[in-house]
Length: 70
Image (cartoon, rainbow, N blue to C red; front, top):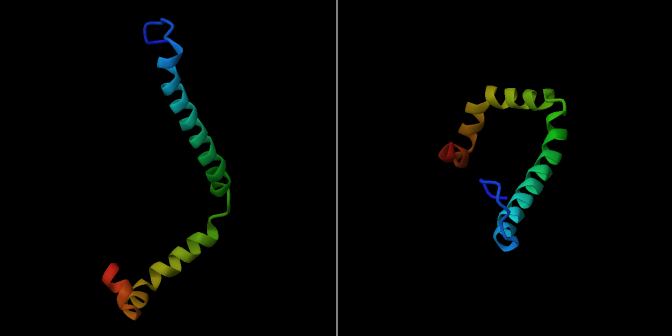
């Protein structure tokens, strides 16, 4: 149906319907992957981030490649 409630021909409705189906499938797949990751314990990641932050200057100084990019 269009915005006025009229039935549209199949050929006119097919492309938007397929796009919506693809979009919904993509979102469903993304959520299926993301939700379990979000439920994981984040403490180990926070600890690694904290250590990297504390030692950032030393790590950058040891590698000229990192220094040039960062």
